[in-house]
Image (cartoon, rainbow, N blue to C red):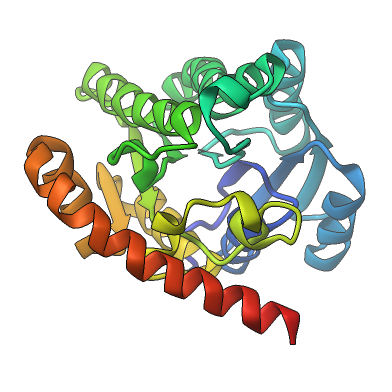
Length: 274
């Protein structure tokens, strides 16, 4: 018996990267998946690959309340339960805060924080009535380390982590669990796409890169056992926390990490140009 047999999993940001990997892994583990993202075409391709008996696409703009309500409703209508919610969708626009268009700043807030808060609120009544459920929120080490040129993104990921812990406390006497997966840099288009890589701060490249599959494995592990938080790379998480708690450490380490990050970013750009 697979560990997620009969479970229905809603995954946001499912058209690529971590979300797409989660979809494949959940289906391989026996689950049925409801795939959400703004673009319909990649979702439909993934449904065709996985099979329409176990996968269902719901094109969704998670920044829209009505769309979030429709997503949860359609998951229930299609598969009859909602056992796991993976809030993975994310948006970013990098640069000094004063230069970020206001609409872009608000979009980061809507997608990274408002959406998972809304979807969590929408999922809870169903999970409570079923007697069990798990919500996995994908945060970021950027939420544990103030990242220049990504101030709004860092703020949303910090808030998502604390929101998750607070709701988990509210639910501590139930069988509904809220977990956080906190990755460092991940080898996806979110930071490596040609359209964005030049704007990614060198500091991001100073830490070991994980693959989307590796982070998806953490999501599935959290969905299975309810562990409050998983972080990868683990050492990067400890450094981020220490730097946040002891500003002097951050001041000491920043020049070292920025030099290393500049070298690593240059290597990525050189490999891409070959």
